[in-house]
Length: 134
Image 1: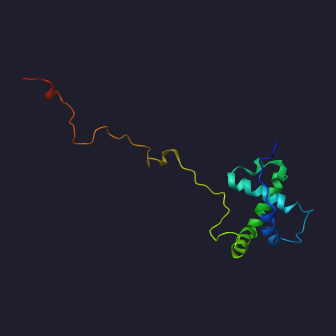
Image 2: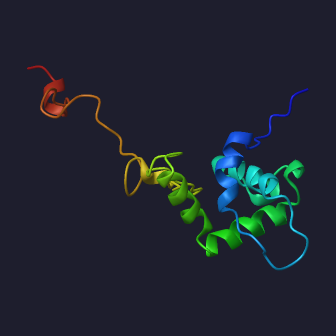
Image 3: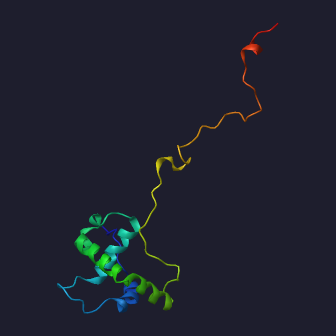
């Protein structure tokens, strides 16, 4: 059975790899290619970091690496370098932001208003005086 997980291709990794941070302090470094392969699907789907498949490594590692690189503006630098190299367009972005619409957003404040079945002035409602014939 084929895995349905996203993995960076050799071509994509060879374009990204030269821009990866080097000589980082801390514990033994987890494979950057595997981590980035785990970051992209989370950003694309909007799922929580804890829902990142274990095949990419611990979800805390995936989140911490994304968060740390974001603070250091790594993603902006990477996108700029790839755009300057012609690998992507300048309009490319990585963002998992979305806007949640409220239930009443469709009709504005107070929700959806009832629309009359007959436009005003076309038909007049019958009143008591019209019901009695002389």
